[in-house]
Length: 312
Image (cartoon, rainbow, N blue to C red; front, side, top):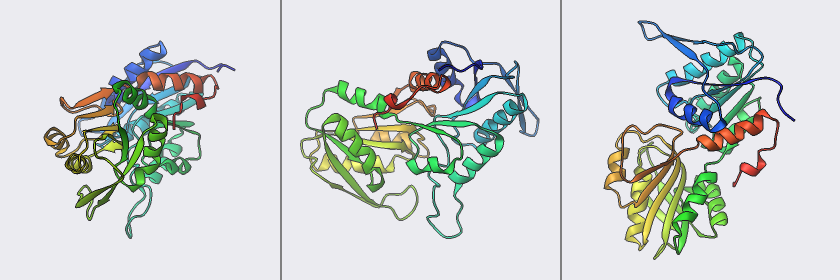
């Protein structure tokens, strides 16, 4: 079955580099959109070509600042008001995903609020990658295509041909992800237990499992300040690990992250381009998700199953 409506790709300003790659992999070009900027910082998106009756894919990661999210919401609204047939928000990095529950009194649940905003703006479908928690899909009343970067990371890890491979979860919440990687790679599994008294600050970290003489790969959904992976790598090297690598989907890399990675005993950090790197680092390797998203977009547009794209 094929879609009868024409397909068009548009991008917000924050993800233009990735959107161009997705459109190129799909075999088309990005549509024309302008962003009128007012002197006070307010902005207004406008499509410079007709989207009437089209299936519109809007590509924008919603990392800080909040303008990136607002820009996406206004692009959805503009497409709806221009009579687009379907509007699909492609959000490679879904911001506010860590706010998926009330972990302290009188706090907001930011992920649910963002889901409500996207729905209110008129989105028909969401496509994203490696949410901080899988259950965030339940915050939406529209279909969610949840992609996994394991489709890129597993083949890359295999290409390294590491012996005595061990897959490590950086915390208890990452055990499901680490278990999936260990099964696909036929490797042993290690769990890191960390004590964190305040956000972004790790007080203590220990490993559950054998890491001596192992080539360890820590898998995570994101790297923020890099405090956890720095402490984990140091602990693992002290306990006899041969090498320590990190694969993480979203390179948030805020605050002292780059300095911590450069000063750590980590051999390599592999990330995707869901978020652009602010600066270059010799230890960081970037894998592009453009062709993976293009493949899934083609399947979704033509009403085909996307099950075969999942390793998890």
